[in-house]
Image (cartoon, rainbow, N blue to C red; front, side, top):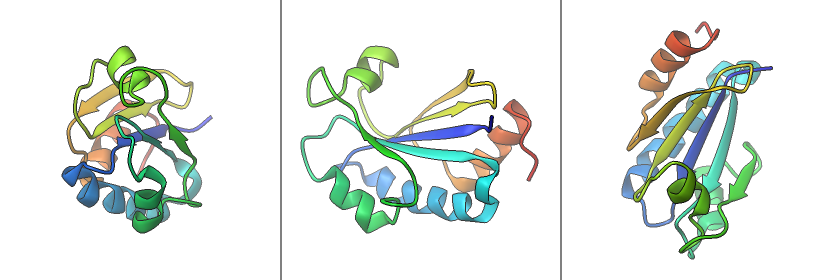
Length: 121
């Protein structure tokens, strides 16, 4: 019943190093109005370690992309994404309303949430 931001990440993703902490700060600022979820994808490495380092372990639900090459079936098979990061925005009804290949800063996330969902900052 709330908009949801899904952030795909990988341990080797330099953009994720900047993006995920920004999105975590945003998620703390807007509280329970928007769900945030992380998916470790295209990664055979230290995905949970990075989630812990960035502070999202325990703050957001975290999933591991499985299947496909390097655990990438969802990111590559469903969304055709060959790199990271990948961000998705769903509206409160669960409809996918935005696919963002590449980085998504906090201010851009707020703008997209306001434009595409019923979220109001």
